[in-house]
Image 1 (spheres, rainbow, N blue to C red):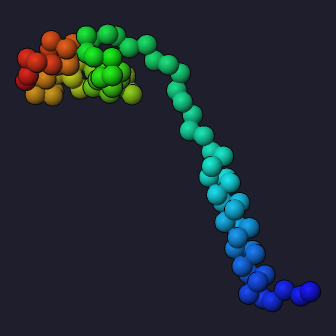
Image 2 (image 1 turned 90 degrees about the vertical axis):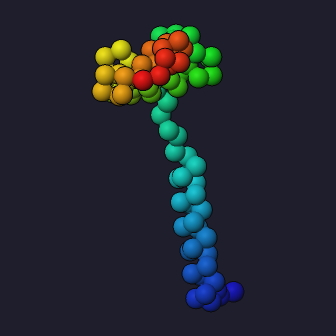
Image 3 (image 1 turned 135 degrees about the vertical axis):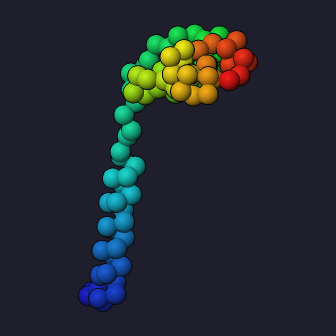
Amino acid sequence: MKLSLVNKVSIAIVLAGSIIIFQACKHQVSVPHEVVLDDGGYPPEINKIVMLHCTSGPTGGGCHNAIGAQNAAGFNMDSWGHSFEGS
């Protein structure tokens, strides 16, 4: 039984698509090691986000900590209480 050119191309496309999908599903994003964050008194669901991204930041600097707040309209988010003081 001979396959027509259309069938051969269809099989090749299906195989290539399967390989691409397999490779995409196989990739895992690396999860950074658990970072110990200061407890700013925020609710637990919010604390990690605020402490990691607002007060310390991924690069070590923070826009809304005691030092960086002077460049962020004075809005300090170091603690739950400071966040209610506004800027």
